[in-house]
Amino acid sequence: MRLPFSLHGLPGTVDVTVGPTRDPDELGAWPGAAGLAFCRATISYPGQGYKGLLGWVQLVRSTDNHSGGERFEMDPLEPLGEVAHPFCFFGITPVLFDAPSRDSRADLDWLAHSFLCRIADRSRHEVQALTGFGWGFTVRAGTATVMPPHALESADWNQHLDVLHADHPNWRFADDVHPDRGR
Image (cartoon, rainbow, N blue to C red; front, side, top):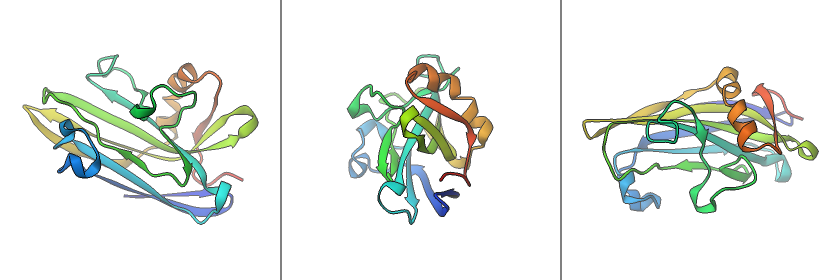
């Protein structure tokens, strides 16, 4: 799947690959990732240096999370633990990668909403989403089924604003996805 965006007047794309994890070791994933979904989203963007400074915000709703699958929750990069910012990956055209792992193959619904973002106002720590996609998997009777990626809209981003504000009160989050804005 390919998603367009524009930043600083320059066009960019996000190429999303979602598939089953066949060899967790090859991906550096835990053994429990075998058969579950993995996701890799790469950015093609001609902006050089700080013009390519972007971040990924990912939220997950899973039937085995704290809310029992009723709400989306922040999904930080686990090796870093809790961080003071909302990004799971941040840098110059960073790659988003995730390979969820579960030791059990009990019935499960797992859905991620992943958004490519920029810091629109550094002095106010304001995050603006440029594009986004959903992806995930289900497990039924011990068998995992991968959900292909699908494009997300402004309404999807906006539904997460409450959790983003609650988890990161020192940050601001612009309403709506802005695929064709950004100076």
